[in-house]
Image 1 (tube, rainbow, N blue to C red):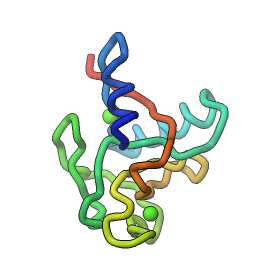
Image 2 (spheres, helix red, strand yellow; image 1 turned 30 degrees about the vertical axis):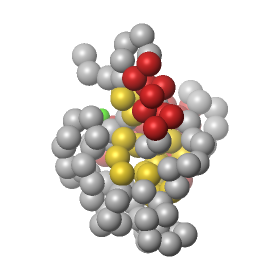
Image 3 (cartoon, rainbow, N blue to C red; image 1 turned 120 degrees about the vertical axis):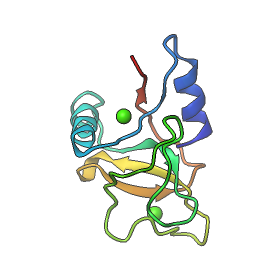
Image 4 (cartoon, rainbow, N blue to C red; image 1 turned 90 degrees about the vertical axis):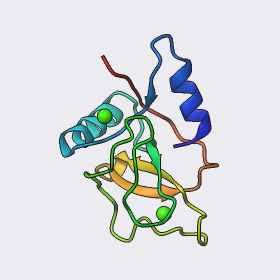
Amino acid sequence: MSIVAQTFCASLSQPSYVIEVQSQEENDWLIELTSTQCGVAYEYWLNGYDTDKSGTFTWIDSQTPSTYTNWYPGEPNDDFGIGSEKCIASSTGYMGVWVDISCSYTRPVVCERNF
Ligand SMILES: [Ca+2]
Ligand SMILES: [Ca+2]
């Protein structure tokens, strides 16, 4: 999740938040959406921070623990040193596996809202 993505979702006419993927079903839905509607397989922000490299975190808006996760083997790994990759993204091109990446990256975002 990046501040830019968070700000964008919050600014929509129907205020939203960066998507929180809480189940395999929702992960499948996100892969389907992003691979068929968005035209490009890529990394999409998820609404959490992996601050301690534990692989578990709290979803920012719902304040619920990440009981479902889909980390790529070896992730999260802080690839460029401790604390270098605190943001989390779903790689739709790789079946929606999750990776920790630098928060300074520019990535697309899917916004979600409550009804
Ligand atoms: Ca959700
Ligand atoms: Ca990583």
